[in-house]
Amino acid sequence: MIYTQQFHSPLGIITLASNTNTLLGLWFEEQKYFGNILPKDCVKKQTQVLADTQTWLEIYFSGEIPSFTPPLSAQGTPFRKSVWEILQTIPYGHTMTYKEIANKLALKRGINKMSAQAVGNAVGHNPISLIIPCHRVIGSNKSLTGYAGGLERKAWLLKLEKAIS
Image 1 (cartoon, one colour):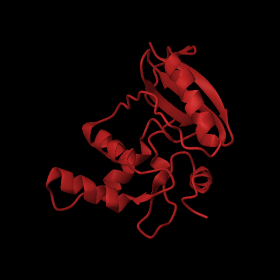
Image 2 (cartoon, rainbow, N blue to C red):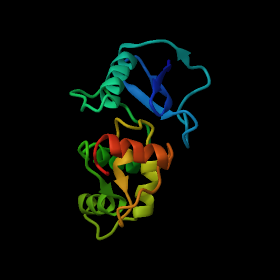
Image 3 (cartoon, rainbow, N blue to C red):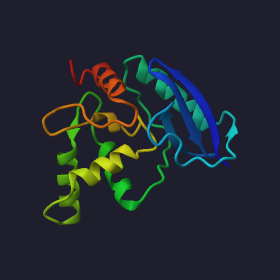
Image 4 (cartoon, one colour):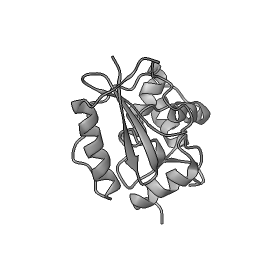
């Protein structure tokens, strides 16, 4: 069974989804790929994971760095999961480019080159926004590019983290 709750953030309504033990999704309302993993028979019910995630969000939106991460279970292909693992290494207040992520993946796989566009596709399909910080990924020229939640939200989040002025 998949359980859902809504969280009212400074950037709009966020939908959270979990099973009994792990967070499966976190999307801004009207986000690209919103709820793309959700079955039609979700149940609106508070779980411990969803309560913990709401606490995490309250801390995050207050401008503080949460000292914990709810248990996560992002569903995706092995390639996407490898990109999302790298996203989770980007510290609060820092950014990484799509190309840097592609280079890390290439090195990890023992190949010369990896497509930054393929990385961008995986970043865009991240089902657990904010906690898996896809908003911290920027273009090679340091531009704010590509965010499924919208570029205005991306800019706001990076300003909150003091990653950009």
